[in-house]
Image (tube, rainbow, N blue to C red; front, side, top):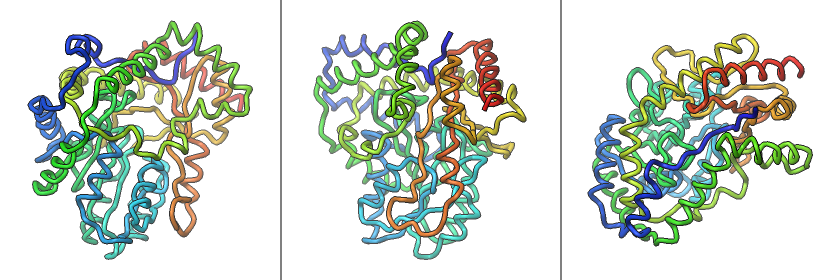
Length: 405
């Protein structure tokens, strides 16, 4: 038996709806898009939500809506998705970094307090892998210096702090609906917004995006179907896993274990009108995702419980934090070695999804924890489709790989 690093599913009735509509979505069915926006805003607990072409498009729209002066200071976490600081830098803003912490892997408020000033216009706080960062302290620091707070919630649908949803603490939050996320509409995302005027501006920009044609929908359905197929247990065991074992001996095998590639900072393929077809997929999943999230959380806690004392995991020590554990994340001093051994033992893993971003722009200073996180972070499979016995089996192999290392 072998276990894939993650499991991708087609959204329910995705092909059926596409075939019934002849792969057409006129982009004008705004009632469904608006229904998704209202449902999402209510779920998160904010006045407004705006459907956008992608998570990174949402960040771009937010930064444009703020009308920042050229060279405005934007602070990002030193360990995050490189697209975030890259986008701010590409727009001509002065990007600075705050060191991460190793518990949540998010921005360390103490480090932020050392770099934030009255020159700071925006703080972008990323909630990584479904574990919220110390957002309340970050929010207070941003407010004290008159800076706007943007929450990167791409991983964090269903996560909360003190009973408040991720995405409700900042002036803005943005979520991703890509295929691996808790809500999968085969692309797209949503932005949560406190200010009505900013929401109106974002909505206008989002609605003016170029409509997608039938070829876009066919390609997305085919791509998602392929991902669902290769992560299906039978196909993975019969074909994908043996191929991964062969690739393990090649010099470029690291690319197949990575969730991010340096050529993925482009906006290409990340723009276009969010369709009513996608919105209906999102509404369907919002109505049914709660028990799936609960099983994901239960699996994560079961796996971490088995490995208590043997493996350091990303987790918050705040009892008011509820993580969704989109990815169960361990810090392994011998990450590459452990990853290779786990693949030999039948456990596929993922690494280098997030990176030490401080090479983007003129960061200044040292960021040893961001560098350590890039070296050590390893994502272990614990997704909802697995059985409890499989979680136990994975824990046994992780313990074995760590002991051998």
